[in-house]
Length: 190
Image (tube, rainbow, N blue to C red; front, top):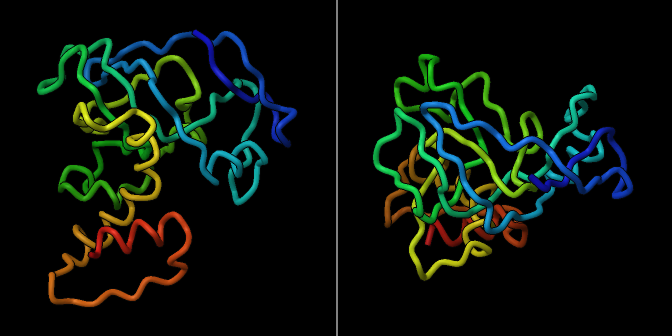
């Protein structure tokens, strides 16, 4: 499959467009034909090797965390999704086996991996991800719109809805309200 990957850290000159093996679909995963992938700071930090995101090469790393697309293959243990479903992907892949994950608190997983920084990401024609990380999108939502959501909105939703369980009568102070996560916080809190 075609992908954009790196074989060393650096500036834009380290980006390579070429062939990479298509991911296999494990029993608890779905394979997605990527319809859109977004660019955010994590992708830049990973490419540069900044902010604790240095890694050893080889193997090459396909960049990109946030994406949306259409399911093309469903693992044997997956229920609730079918080939052809339109979805977005939560790029934070948790272990699913630790005490936190089993208790429904996957945000506290001690060993999360992010697509495009710890494992191959979405700057590719296809990705295979756990079905637990896939969320259906409506036909009125474009892949581009959906791919812009995960890294900014999912942490905010987790903080405001799952952790503090924000009530309609409560007030929220959002610092850095002009940035992506701050803007998302304003919208989720409203």
